[in-house]
Image 1 (cartoon, rainbow, N blue to C red):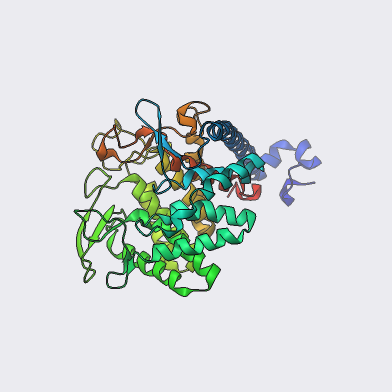
Image 2: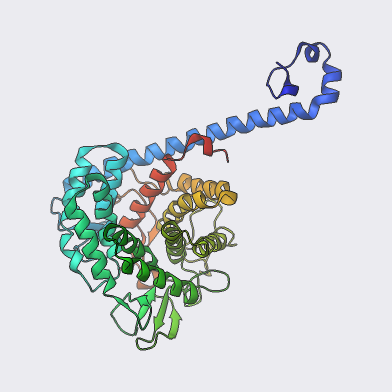
Length: 423
């Protein structure tokens, strides 16, 4: 077998006449060595990734089994850790209520442990009444995350009805004269829309698929189009809040509620936008949404304040960088979004995969991953609402949506075929 024919073994002539062979074919030999080295490097990286993912899943299994035992009352949902390390719990109407059962469904999918399925059902059922909640835009987080996952597993007709009713309730917050789904009902805002709302559009698309009612889909598309038009700056960073006039839909002001200031790039907001427009492309196959997602990814990954380990600071424009907080939850959301986006952009697939793996490798190290304590959450160092302060703002805390998106990203990473890892 001859290396000149693309094989890895030298001919007898090459062995007996090494000087002549290397003179003529040294460059091919170097290419072979580089290919072999690259193969083993990629194999080693893949093994390391799998090991870190397995460790994170094992930690999650332990932590969440402990949580299920500790939180016997299914009307109580663990949300985050307080500054003193104690647990902050919520009722079903909180926007974060769906993440705990969502994580349980993910763990069931990864482990097939029936205990997780039973717990996921228990905490999902306790959310049923929220399908009629018309006071919040967060029904995608609250309802589709647990009931969408549950429906995929159980094919339960009651879950299907809950998804549809939740979408109907969300649709009541859409007003044609404005063109978007209203986020908040409190002052001083008139008709505020936050970038987070992009994450709730998936519920509308799924309801449209389940019912054949195009109105749900049309609302989602119109909302996303308005977000593209008004939420983003020229560099594709996003405002957190855009406040509209409720009578004519004109923009009143562009602000932030949770970032450093009105013109800063709040990290989790950028993550919501990246994830949301990736989902928009999934359901519509409209290239403008794919382009938007790519532009947002470019802004994040190429920002001068984006850390080398992939876990962003809580706001890209905090002047105290690097002496400020990281937001591990934003990193988890970005990683999960990139792992989907890579499927739609062959030219950037390898870049997005490597960036996602970089984030996950960082988040599954001891600095960020808790194997015990931490309120039974696995992810540390998340930032919820920095302007509220440490007492109520969930700063440098464990937060349930951080866990959810970390587990989702790990699940997505583990499903990637070995043949794709070297691309």
